[in-house]
Amino acid sequence: MIEVRFLVLFFIAFVYGQVELPEYDANEIIIKNKGFTLSFNESHRQSNWVAYELTRAETMGTSPRTNYFLVDPQLPGLCALPTDYKGTDYDRGHLAPAADMAWSKVTMKESFYMSNISPQHYSFNRGIWKKLEKLVRRWASEYESIHIATAGILTADLDKIGRKNDVSVPEKYYKVILDYKEPELKAIGFILPNKKIKQPLQNFVFTVDHIEELTGINFFHSLPHDVEEDLESKSDLNSWIWD
Image (cartoon, rainbow, N blue to C red; front, side):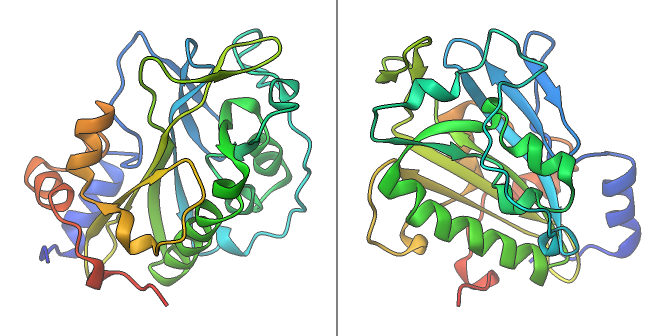
């Protein structure tokens, strides 16, 4: 456990800014919405990552789910279309879950932009992925706020779907979570195969360092270097609530 006092946390939060945003360069397509920020990958027709903070108050949002998928107005002609999924075994799977974005009508609408959607096998999306999303909301409520980055792992030679576009189907999805509130700073990562999974979530826990190696993404780079190194190298299951 890292011993960090209030002034250090204040420095991280307000000097370093949005600690949930992964590192990106000037060539990336970065879209900043009210509820989340994303890095869009045009060749795969989906996001490299979707990142946001989720607070306790936001988990109690009451905006109704719209179920109305939309082309991202900031990415005309680049996103997949809702109809690209028709006739496939893949759900239009949320990266930032709609339930995480229920704290306003705007954020709920944003969660149905196709830039926040990725092809997830129906048994995965409605199974273990949904279970993980619920667990993450519980953590946000329990720990006051957490930072999340998530997407499919985008590699060459992935299968494609789409009537109008070639939409890559990730073989695996990742989610990394950071809690930097006292009394205990901690981080955890998940890598889940895009298929029906019966094993418990704990079987798919990895360090953030490992996920960075697989994705090439530098997640919590804005933290002080020694704090980042320590947090990203550990995956202590006992530090998190599971039941």
